[in-house]
Image (tube, rainbow, N blue to C red; front, side, top):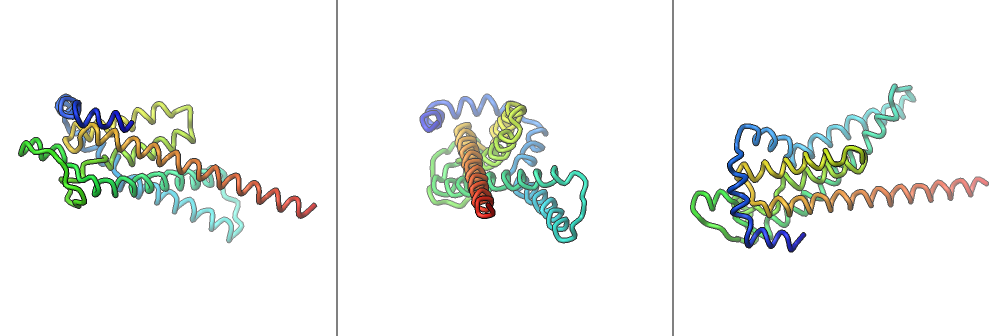
Length: 212
């Protein structure tokens, strides 16, 4: 993937960017709004908080809540997605500053490209694409939970990346880098949850053995 990113940076970014740039429209703003890092963090945090609150109230008041098993699953899944997006965002945010790549708008307006490492300016925070990494992290995580729909979810994630190029916010290589980071974060959190599940099973086995 690193080789592909470098190839795009050296040869393909500008022609592919110009090709995608012709697909502008209001749809770009809509997709950008629902694929942003802020959207995924806030929406998953709200779902996790709401379902977690129901679980706490049920435990305290010992209530019989309809569809509780579904609520409990949604609670865990929302935490999974939240952590995936947060991890991808942390890595991507650091790389944006360290790399300091100029956004395409600078090239379109002034004909300038290049890098300004350690810059916090928006115009030099192009790589990786934050919208793409957040959306890929979220949808890949959800795809792991619902494998039957993973290809549809991946297509939706690709559309988010396409919109960032068509809107002039990122180079294609920025989007590819964001997708790699998002997918890696989703897989890392998946392994984390699997490790927690294994540890919980071992703990339960220890308790059961102690009782016997």
